[in-house]
Amino acid sequence: MACRLLCPSQHWEEIMRKERKQFFIRLIPPRASFTMDITEPEKAIMQEHAAYWQKLLRKNIAVAFGPVFDPKGGYGIGIVEVMDENEAREIMAHDPTIKAGQDFSFEIHAMKLVRK
Image (cartoon, rainbow, N blue to C red):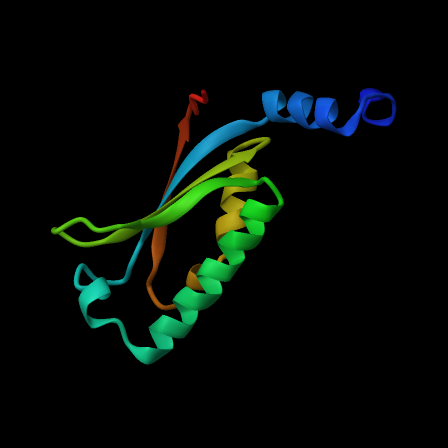
């Protein structure tokens, strides 16, 4: 880790990126019809959720996130780069959708992100 002090910041970020692992997170709403009949309080939670994930993007923790419009029932996805699955679980523990206690749930799966 001495390189953090000696290496240019871009080089350090590349080293850290290589050490991090990628995880696919699926956010499951409380009901299949959620995107069709979302309530005002749920809209507020989702706005907080979007702001939370925007912050993760700015910190280069999240790679991408957004809704999936599945006809069987929408859900959200996020891809994060973190040191391990526990860190991904910690991210979700702080997600406003989970903290709200409104029956949102999530799945986390290890993945390998392929870049250009």
